[in-house]
Amino acid sequence: MTPEETLTSLVNDLDAADTPEKFWAVQVRLANEIKEDERQKSPETDEHKHKLRLLGDALAWKVLDRHTIRELSRDRLRAAHLTSQGEDFEFVLRVAETSAKRGDFALVCDLTHLLAVGDVLVVDSGGIVIFECKNRTIPMRPPTGRQARQEKRAREASHYLERGFVEIEGGGDRISFDLDEPPCEHAALRDCVERSYIDPDGGAGIAKLGERDFILAFRVGRKEIGEVLDPLFKNLNTTGWRLGYSQGFSGAIWYPSPFRSNPFLLPLTVEQRCDLVNGNLILMRIVDVANLDYSGEVDGLRVEFSVATKGDELSFRASVDGESVSISNRFIEQVFWDFKSTANMGAMVAEMAAKTAKISNALQDGSIDRSEYVSPTVRANHAFVFRKGQSGNPLVRISVEQLNRLGVDTSAISDDLFVPVEGSPNMAIAPPMVVELKSGRPTMRPAGEGEIVSGEIIEMIGIDFPTRTRAEEGFEGET
Image 1 (cartoon, rainbow, N blue to C red):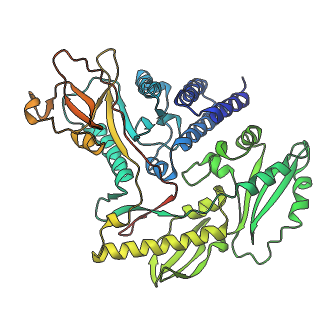
Image 2 (cartoon, rainbow, N blue to C red):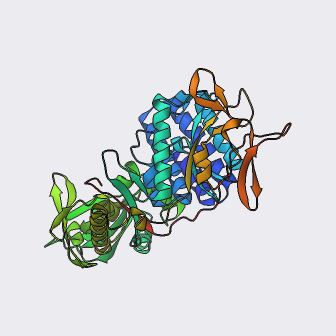
Image 3 (cartoon, one colour):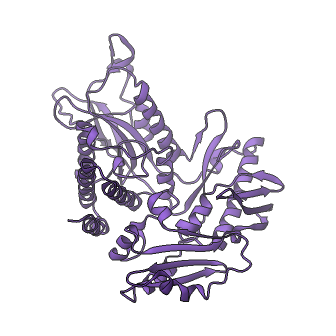
């Protein structure tokens, strides 16, 4: 198949991936395609690899909310090279496949652009678990170096997702809280895209979301670009716009982020989505970004902000009750690449600014505890997975603290069960353990004599994903 035919086939599989088995099958195809592109090494295959990982991102969006994806995409680097990992990557696939066969949705992070914490992310009825996979036997010492840094990052991410806050090195907290997010204007998007397909030789459509706020879709085909667009631009008067900007959706395709729509999940046909990714369909946002400007009372506070230019970039200047506040540019991103109307986004930014100021002031004067403001959380955990000798199921190393956070009763685990490791004073070997239900609660106990312990991954229990968006501000000056 050509790259275009492969992409179309995979998008059809993506749409049909409604079970763990189908979900996993798409990733097997993605892994094989990416490895084949890596062997060919050309600009064309590099472009194709990028599109394949966009599909991997789309799988993540099917089972995770934006808050979780944002946290797991922090500090992401360039996508890893799969074939150079050799057997290590095959071990990652084996861990993910084990989870998929158990009925869980397993995500291989290296098949995505966005997931940057862990090697495998497992989503099941109990929550999410971040697995770091090590294709070696369990070391008899605490993690050091890169492994210690990986454990720290996974621990911080899982703690933040579960508790709703994390302490920042150097002082202060990063706290998440809920905001009512305006909807994506998908009906308007579909309308202008469908009009661009009426004429097979090329066409265009435009949708108005509000004053000085438009979505434009066009296909050139056999027609000249002027022939397609000129009739529309006659009715698009930008006189009097303070900060008129146009941005193509290619910014979301080539620079994906948690605040930019994934092209493969837009409510368009398979043909339209593939045309968009392959450059045969162009989407533009044409807006006066000054629509975001706001001045008014919110929850008893005076909120004022405006959008300004800084070189080629747009940024906010904002204050709450006269005090300067920092507002993330991601709200501007959502206008251009998440199809949010400027008027609705401006109202949400005002609410966010006021709420951030109130929380920050209350925390500083000690009048409230941060737990009073954190949003509903995602049950999350993390663990290292190691190889069991030369064969057998992967073994998971997980702390008693993590088990307790999962709701597992560990009261039967006592100090006298552990045997110290000679030469490693901080390490001890535990006997084989069994997790079983007692009075409806998972309970851990030492295995009896002759009792078989499989070493399978412990099942997670109970989760409620939030239906509202998370705002997240770092207090003490960091956003």
